[in-house]
Length: 135
Length: 481
Image (cartoon, rainbow over all chains, first blue to last red; front, side, top):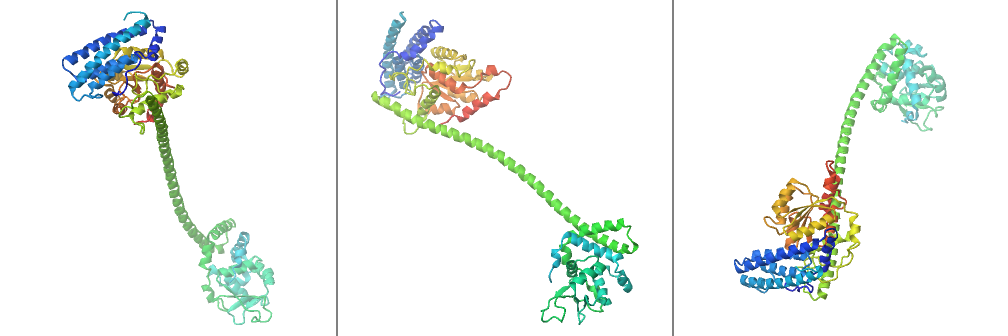
């Protein structure tokens, strides 16, 4: 999406997550295991992004990683993470942003990654409170 | 000349002609005829010769006689002529018939002014023929029936002659009649032949016309069929046009609503999306909107419409509780769905939803596997991610479409860029389910493509084309960009 769109106010879109939580009725721990899976996935994706920034600075790859994590985070209602991931995707495709050089896009992605890690922690915290458990 | 014969009925004509025919052989007037003994030579105008003999005999001068100059003959007393002479010599008592016969031999009635007429013959009928003269028997050879009048009554005469022939044979015909009879038979045969060839001609014509009518009937039938086909195609096209139109207007108004809602939140409208002309981005949204309409779900812009997945903070409608029950009633269980997705979280979530709706799910994680799976097995529906390793969903779909045009393939994507959407549809995808989607969004899509259909697994061997053609119809009707 465009540069102009704002970071969502809430960390989690509960309309979406509640729908998944409701699936627990006939499958105990479904939503939780899904979230656990996502956190693992996010951690490794963050690491991969980090790697690309440090090594080959492959914008294409970075964009795809952003897109990948955007999909799963959005489907779980983790809207702030998804928003940041979309930024990474767009920067990878050299869209959205004042940068004109690849180097600038890499910087923007670097910044977004930091933000994503922060949001990741926030989400874990909120979900930990909801599930009364430590993620 | 007055053609009095016109007034005669068929019966009178027969009577008259028979009178002539039989009168030739054995009439009571034969005494006169045979006395002169000159009638054998020319039997074609016996009537005239008989009349000539009557006049020459001068037996009835008060009734019928030559005119003073001998060029005409006059019937002085038509009443007595009708009651005495006609029955005696011509076997009938019809003066009109007599006049008609004269007319046939080209006699003409001589018209005189009453003043001019000699004394006592004002009411007489005077007739003239250029060869009918007093004492001129040789001239009689020149008196013949008019060919024109003969032609006019050809059919009548033909039938009359046939009947007469029958009578003559039945009477074991007298010797004297043979020559005459032969002539009549020849004449009759001649006429008959002409009639037959004409008949054949007409018959051929009729047959030609019949075959032509048959041909034209077939042609007409074919054209009707073609016309019906074209009309149904036209109706289909019109229907899809209308649905596209209503679709577009809906889309515009919804888009406007969405834009307004965004404006209220102080969001700038993204570049590249315009609500003035319906474009690919809008298409996606309105399709979702359409999906929602049958479910009577709210059409207020929700979080899943067109590329505002996570940012939209508008309250979602709390209709989720009742809709699934309603929806469940129209979607059968047992549909086999192929899920093509590379993200494990999405796979689990999506297959969870699908199973919730009674579908069985098979998962592959890239475009190549999707193609090979679809080659081996048929599915009721395919949900296809776009961005995947090995082969992207759009390309995979275009390859699948080369051997399978029926299975609905729905794109699942977070990329709702105009150009992308156009590409997906051009690659043969039926619809787009924007990520992230809710349970209800997915259900609407299932309803849209599987409603009223019987799962392939239940169709088994009995080739139920109904469901398939329904699916095809849906595909046809689907508005394309």
